[in-house]
Length: 146
Image (cartoon, rainbow, N blue to C red):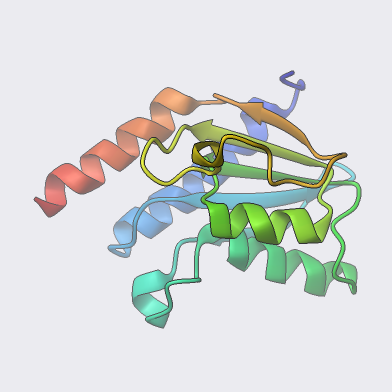
């Protein structure tokens, strides 16, 4: 179920995705919100860091945990422009994040391909927020690459 601020925060995640796009990274952006405030902003950095694990979600989890001073992201919401992959879904599960909101579905590598939820049992999922905008940025990126 979409919350009133979901569109606002997803626009912030899209700004991060645009930053990734401009840096030549796959344009995925993520933010983490706690008590109505953005505590982490991140985007894909796999090329810059030469690290296949440097996905937007992983970067955001690390930043948020540092800000909060602990490894659990209880009472936090992740906004990410693309459905998390299985690796990111696993990390998000371990973080015990309360809620995940994502834009576009990832038909090739999204967590949904497992056929079951890999998230913490209490984590709520909302999909499709600004999905068209998120998908359009991805299409443009890959069209330019080819």
